[in-house]
Length: 128
Image 1 (cartoon, one colour):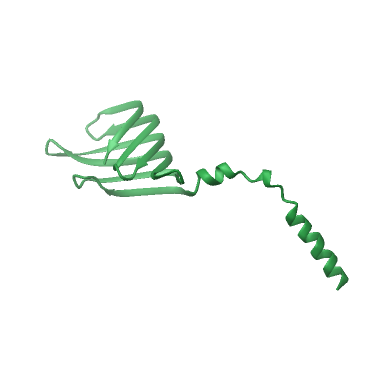
Image 2: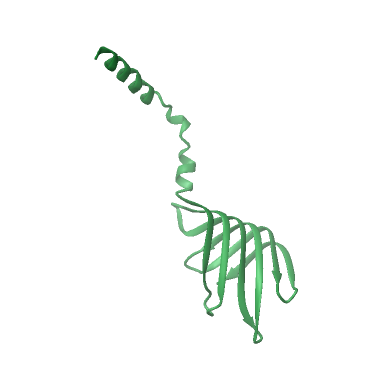
């Protein structure tokens, strides 16, 4: 019984000794909802399908209407001049603005279309 009391006291001291400075509150506050290998699919306002895949996606407390994306791959299919065209896109980072149904891509943005068009840019905005 004495051993249990001594062990309990030592165990309690170890729990209380955890330094609060070791907890990164900024990381906890900014990465509230974090997903790995996240996929978003749906239809744009014209009824055309899109698919976005990101290595990581997260939402933050102070910007709940934005999903922050990293290492993005996706495709968007649209009917242009009566023909279906698929645009494959990739980027280092992005933001999916939920209410505006808009994706802002940044960092090594690359778009390759089934029509043969290719675009390489620093930033691209896609309205869904």
